[in-house]
Image (cartoon, rainbow, N blue to C red; front, side, top):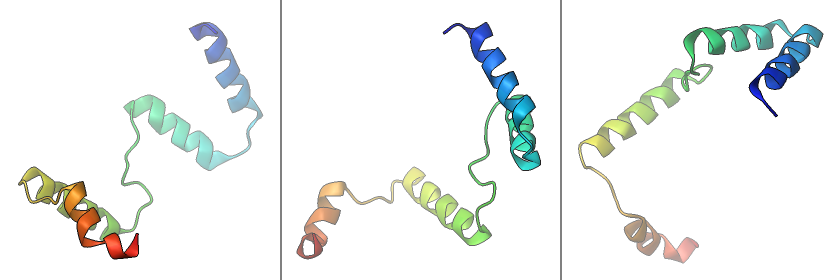
Length: 75
């Protein structure tokens, strides 16, 4: 399938939908070129993920092997 065919397919789907929230998301995606992983998530979850990312950036991580060894009795 070439790009023009794909574009026409998407236009057809857009014209057929009555879901405003979906159209709004498609519009934002096309305007901004990316999706925001945080959108729609609870603030405490966003903070937890960001805290974990910062810990990983600082080198404060545990290897997969260490986790498996520690929790092998439950596996």
